Length: 383
Ligand SMILES: Nc1ncnc2c1ncn2[C@@H]1O[C@H](COP(=O)(O)OP(=O)(O)O)[C@@H](O)[C@H]1O
Ligand SMILES: [Mg+2]
Image (cartoon, rainbow, N blue to C red; front, top):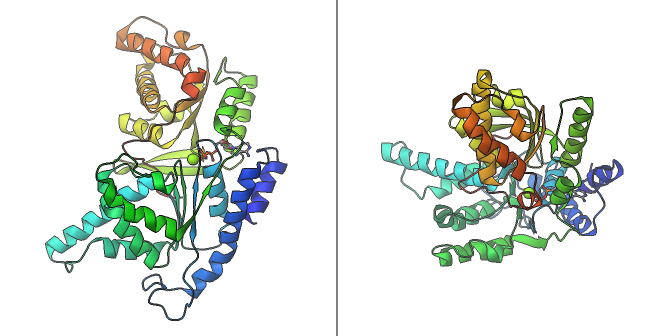
């Protein structure tokens, strides 16, 4: 199915509305998805690249850089493109996670050189070669340059990736010319920006509205009590948020994996028992908060001192997501201030902060807050 067919199917299913600006982007993505399989066959050798590969005459097509405000459907369109793309070696990754991976690989090359296992060379070259070998098409969600360490390697890295014929599709909140706008030593990033403009077509996705905010505001975000009607409403909210595109995901958290069985478009849905009654800790909650802009939690029970472990985890989770502006949709046995009963223990006291945050998180001003992913994202070990 083409990107357009997938988009139309979502419209027909009533999951999304038809949007003119999105359709223009869909066309561009479709064009790319239709030509890439042949191009990629023509230039099979990722290691040599089209520059050196005499059998492929034409350079690879330009990628696509889609920028626009939040909630315009950038991630959704990129996911549709990615699933429509019939190229086996493709990779879709959050840009922060990609850069974390790049720095790790550079580090291992340096270590190998130090040990004498490998010849001294610019570590970026072998890293770019390996990346290009693994994926001929790279899809980056939330392309941004926030870090001087990234700024220092991006130009050389992308020059080599493009040299190997890698095609890049990216979403971002800003056009290339505004990347790393007030960053330190910005002049070092200018050649990289020029390179992006040269190797990618840049389009703005000016969709009608912030669909995410609209969806969050059209219904309540906190459902009480836990009955069949609430369950139905939670399913409806999830169906609206996920637009019917649901995937399991695994997040890498300090050397372990945290599984998020139900995710879609940057949202994740967990049951209270999966997220608060399992042995998870602050680093897991931090990863969840950074990775997902919206969290859906089913079945928050009333708790007292007997349930202090899940209660403690719940407090930590809410603090983490509150700090990151992650939106919460929840079903619970009771209203926030009635969730914790009994006066015993530190939790009773701390829970008051949690309850007040739960209430604030329903407000329009909280729902309009941007999602903070600073400090890196933990996104995917891809599935
Ligand atoms: N045309 C549309 N009609 C209705 N909802 C949409 C449409 N496009 C996107 N959405 C919804 O808006 C939300 C935000 O989309 P997303 O792709 O995450 O935006 P962005 O990446 O631009 O911030 C998602 O829940 C998505 O399902
Ligand atoms: Mg997005």
